[in-house]
Image (tube, rainbow, N blue to C red; front, side, top):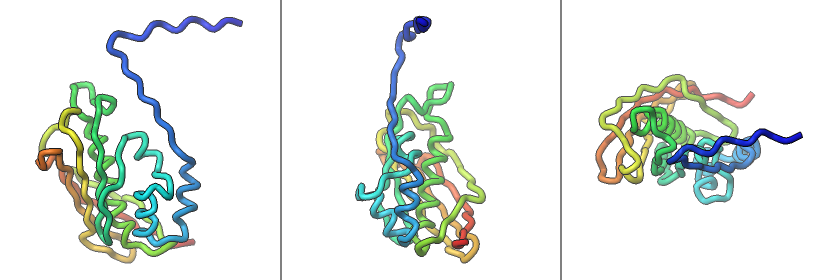
Length: 173
């Protein structure tokens, strides 16, 4: 049976191919490591990054206890309908940086998940803003709930957004 012909691509069509590794293998690789060591191995390329980082094109930058930085350069594939970088891209990078900042403080086998995040968008982002640096810092590392804050800066160092988050600490079963 013949397949119907696909219509030609519209003028200006762009393509992006995404590849990733099995996220459960990454999670298993980190299950027996303290958070800072696990994330350090991801940053060094010894453990594959989570698929979201590949999908959205960002990587781990600086790591220290209570601090995590992500670096990414947005392109048109993350634009919203009005021709700017979608707030969800910025929020995803912030959620990742704040969560990983908390992860750097956790012992092996302890996990976390976001309870809430509040983002203040201060300036718009376009694909020509260059590299974004998103830095998360733990403000309180509690036993059941941790708190973190962070910001997004463009290549010129201007703050584009800030955020605060609460994260649930999940002890091993």
